[in-house]
View 1 (cartoon, rainbow, N blue to C red):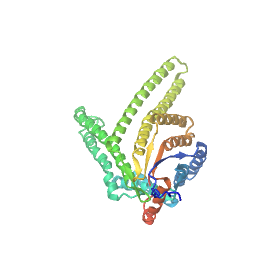
View 2 (spheres, rainbow, N blue to C red):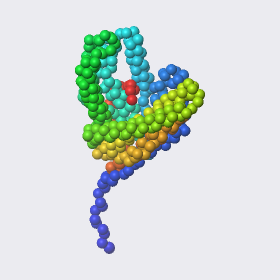
View 3 (cartoon, rainbow, N blue to C red):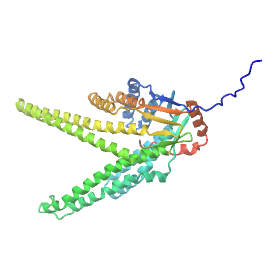
View 4 (cartoon, helix red, strand yellow):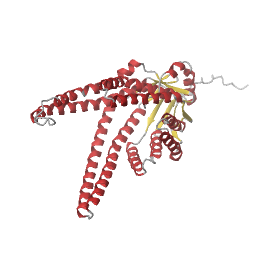
Length: 412
């Protein structure tokens, strides 16, 4: 007999390879235009009360066409909660408008303070609602932050309010100064006495507000990821506040540069317009037409001026966040969004939306969403089936009734 091979078989091991799954978006501008135009018409016909239904249809379109590892996202929000959240906001607006028009300043101030104190609740309620309505392969997201964590993360909101107390006190001192012979004109010495404190306090409040807005965005995004869950797995968050602050400072630089370029362009338009006006015949009518055209051109250019800065911040932040988050130790994301390409796309979209009186907006929204979505790749450790199976097993023990009871589509 021949000698048998008695070597034991190699033990089976779970796959530890890392597999990439680029995100895909299958929607088109033409398809979404049909959804958008129906939403717009029904919202106009119903005096705005179709808004929650329009928001749901829009969310479902983008979710259903966003494919992650071969499976689309699902938006399973309850329509009644979206309607209830919308009605609450309408009620708050009606009360505020009534108090304002009836001169009940004390009640209005008390209401505004209450709304400010409840702002973190509104934000968290909206995030909780949106997370609970998001599913992938039957497994949903959840936002598990406590109210204490939410209000601690919201401290920049209250810091901004305090920062503006000093300017308000200085302004109050100016308005309560002894009037001169003309009771509507402040005395020059009082103005000089308060001018330096006023400028210093306003500058300080602006700087504090700028830093606090960046901090608030960092706090909220980190809370969303770190206290978010899919199945039973926690999110993983790596960015630090310095990353956010650098992006905000760079955004400020882009805005100032854009403003400078726009100012030069407006100055050239004004100079050219006055030169043409001086050589033109037609008197007052021609002058009125020039002024109107100049106003339209200036408005058009000013709208374009802020677009690069907003798009720059959005793209930088999107890339930072998606390059530094993951799902426990099982999955992570990578993003290759080109900032320059995204800024160029946004500027072109703003121009086309203005030229088409808004009718290009659905095409612009689809184009921007596609560029962002398809720049993200999901990397899964151990295989997709293993990840999906573990998430599905841990989904059943999370207390669905409690999660479903919390959250209304109030904001966002």
